[in-house]
Image (spheres, rainbow, N blue to C red):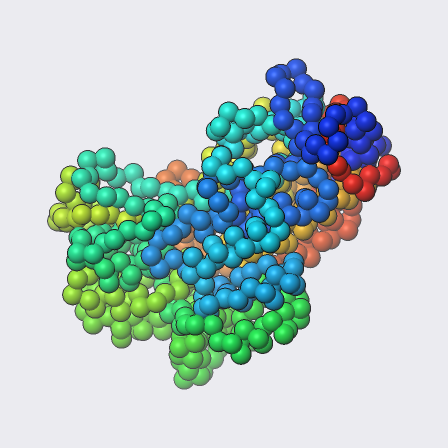
Length: 587
């Protein structure tokens, strides 16, 4: 690993504070930075996104005494839970674990209504967090960051918004989310359709009434599996257009049990510690020490049945090698396919719903409420568009190779440009005019999923190369935000204001991410983990599959070793600071 490069420097905050006396308006929290361009508002940090990552990052930066501005394209906080309001939208991590742990008062006072929280309840939780910690006052809503350019002369980021505002900042933190850039399929004739079209990731806030309508749902990933049963109850007729069948496990959802809730709240400290130290994803599941293909067939059947009845992602922990050994994975997949055949009365439909092209769990495992049962309804038709592809959308419906389907409304449950889409949707330019799009043209490259070489002081929360979407996301958000905040505090105390990864350390990490993925069954699936749902996107396994425990240990080790693999320096001319930065200290 490349050694840390130290350069003597004044402390960043002390350095800025020396010019504070030259400023005006005591209490003004902004920075004024002299440049050759027009005057621009300046702050210590900009946070892009006001989902859970952006909210917690903003809170921690404030605790450091930094001036910060947040930008959010939505009209309020919530991130993906602000936009994904489709019927049936629900979290696949149990409510008692899908929450922040940084505040004991917060986790004790909030009460979840269901075992798996619905979108409205999760959005209410995000709003509660924003209100409890007074976070909205530093967030500009209805405003997107359109460009971010690094100025090597000043060592500052120049931020442009779609509202015409320009800012300069020392640190730019991208909390844009892994599932926030919606994807619409390229189907000819979409503009000709005379009915209404919707995307699950951009659902109307007022809701949609499908009563009596002929509705088509395109896509059977997580959002499709969740919305299809609900829409089927409303629609006059529902046509589901499926290209790829996905494995789904019943959620077993229901009202929150008071005793279960109390068991968590009385033991949150120990349980949170267990999540950090003894889980693969940050979610506590019932782990097994047995290998699936070695278990007695009767014992194996009983275990799968028990977990199926319990519901949720716990099913995939029935044996400890389901994502490592094809033989064991086949036993789990066979069990689920048999359950599908036992639920769906039409054998031909059951066969279409039974995945055969990927190992179970190598695409994000779905959890559902009455998904397979929905295909027993008289008003639901499953259309296999792998054998009869969609040719075009017409004024009155959808044409496949075999038939035309008359529709009043279409729902696109076609997912996202995951993990990289939101970041690459911003024109980000680093050292030497290098764009992030060019740096990532063969797939995303990061060091620890936190930063990319050539882009100083640009952090990503749950970025590619970190556990992110393979973990309980709030769990990983907390770990990333705390690491970033600790890093900035360390830089301040040691007299540095610039950090970026060494190229060699980044390459070693990328190689490690790929090496670990290749030991699993994950690369066998054409999943959005691989970017396979986006035409032309490089096929690279993007998240880190090695587990949250070794990942956290690696991040802690890097920090303990003086941010090994990163280059720290003091760069740029003086700032004319008018902020209230605290704990100023000269190294």
